[in-house]
Image 1: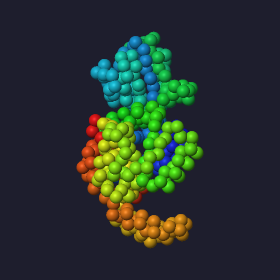
Image 2 (image 1 turned 90 degrees about the vertical axis):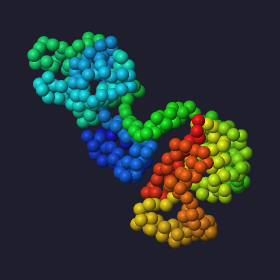
Image 3 (image 1 turned 180 degrees about the vertical axis):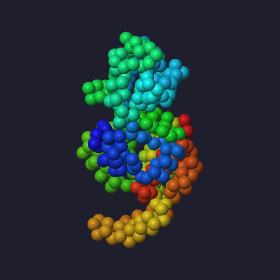
Length: 351
């Protein structure tokens, strides 16, 4: 079974892997329903790195593509794509494919994973005049063969120039791409805030051990009254913390205040599973089993009895999204994690 460059990452992240077109590919992470909703309401990434990629470049790239495919590639503009096929010259097809126009002299052909080698061989046979492409004119050769350069970008021989694909789909695909572009620049400064001095001291030890003292600052502050000027940070994140805010709405408004226009907040917090059977099992474990086990290990029984009470009382899902909207955020999404035990909220400050 073949593997792609992403196979190891999928396995580490817990994807369900299945054989597909000779490759070991991810079929789902959290289930069809959750992933369908995610793509329809926000964005999702599809691993299509097993697909073939063939670059066609040169002054006569378009005439060559017009000759070897059935659709009219002259209608394409830069950045556009069309569905087409390779006719075999005998009334049938070699394979179907997608043709992307990058610019007037550069086209990307995306071919089926299982047929990559066959399609690559066909294109080269056409280039070299080894196959008959027009039964009425058996001597004819495809236009542009003298000045066209083709490359199989999935081939290992391409080395560092090899390319694979990921498909990003959904109404917020553009936002994800812009965020990825921003990730291309290293984070210059990280500021952490906590009301607990003991937690800050522990955090300083971890920062020092990681060698991040020059780029990290910890500040003792109340989430409801942050000691930072307006429009300070590119991003504000909280993990399993907003549930403990004594003034939740005020804390969310403070997060929005210190974000720069166009900045983003990302909040990870516990929630409750929606599936009735799983919810009942989870609550039994959460209320009766987890506190005893964790209490024995940590000797802090009260803390783990507080945990389930705080989670069950905390607004989650749409209720928390409504609070974010009331605090002035937009483009709000909520993604359930681990069957709904946790929720990842993402929201932006208006630009």
